[in-house]
Image (cartoon, rainbow, N blue to C red; front, side):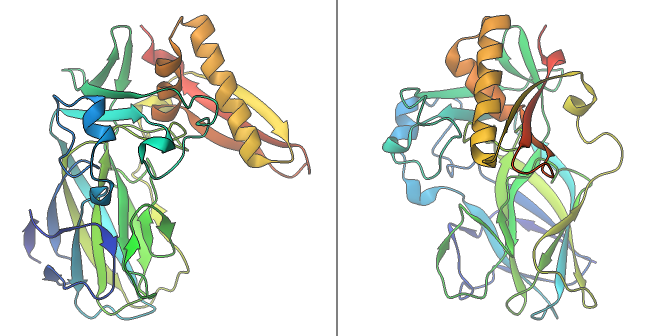
Length: 315
């Protein structure tokens, strides 16, 4: 079993015709040098103008594709995420769609005038310096991991799909294993878009986007058949936030999306009232550490959605 270093092979779309940058055997390790989500256009000294004027075509500089020997259509590729090494900083933002961003925050229509780029540094306590009295524990994860789809490309990387892609799942952290269905020979694996923190739902649009060095072991399963990604989380506590006490807001009704918006809005208002936060800070926090949860879906049409936010991040 070999170890390969990937500090090249950046691309911006899924396409089964891309030339593989690396060929590996099942069981090999790959060390990825992942750029932040804007492909190096955002640095620790950047301002909002750098984000607003950035080249949106360079969003998600993922690394690959990697050809896994003997992988055939119908097989499953396992990506075991073994280590994440951060570079000391990350960024997040509030950006209305009118500024060229692809995607939408959950409350974008209500908060469309919010424009901000926030550079966040990591302290000795492995927490992000969000505010002097608000410390966010880091939880490095991989926002984007996937295989090339069978449909002719190119396809932008912004959407999740059957073969993985931009899943933005905070549980894809060190020790987790992702299983992806193969739709083209060799699988053609790519990886990137690393996060230092995000809540379930990533409701304010951006996570804490960050450059990172990720080590993964790649395996082939010939006897598995799945229709969409599966994953196994690392054992033990999934993240420091998950061991904290939570405050939760709730919403009920027949529309899950509207319920999510209502629960998110209630949390923003609670943070502003009880913790005297300004609107941008409160909304950002809901996306970075707030978890949207479907608590109950069987009492049609009164579905219950909540947003949970860890209280212990406040000092």
